[in-house]
Image (cartoon, rainbow, N blue to C red; front, side):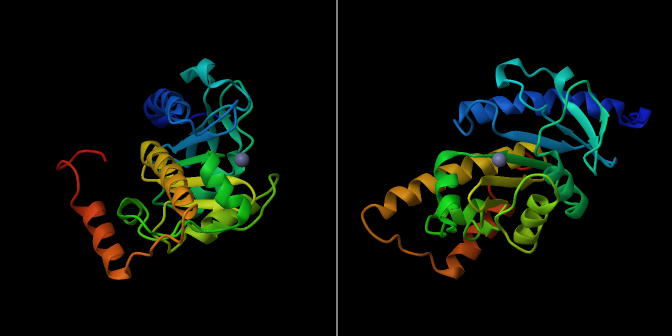
Length: 230
Ligand SMILES: [Zn+2]
């Protein structure tokens, strides 16, 4: 185990609380069962991340349980073993410097699209707002090396969507912080569900690309309260 730099202590203490607490949103929005699913956050200004420990029930997660790792996924501070998805999260932070939060879930409807290896088409204005495009499918990759992280980065680099459906697996989302990545995971499941239901009675109508562009631009740049987090 390494040592936590003194200059990171304050941010780490805050992120242990925030990342621990925000796991309750995964439960509240029914994106997870048992202990499957995890949230991490980058420690601003440091090559560190804060992530959930492996296998601890959501209702028992305390700030003290959260694990600090470097961007190679090596534990720097924490008593427990980090999430088994830590290598994927670390890979994303290493290769996407603008990303401050990463979420992984096996939420039902989104994972059903992943099981078919099918992207969720952009057929709703709310989808154009948040995702600006289809929600793409990433490659099939097994846990144990960099391949999940590499698949996430290769699929989302240059893509507007903050969410990727990893083939035959589940959802990874990215955001400027953990909260934004959780929001993308919630929205991903919501639109995956709605488009699935639409499919039952016919073929959803695609949005015109110009409308997708307009909606996405407005939502990303104008929507909400000035200065407020979305
Ligand atoms: Zn998984």
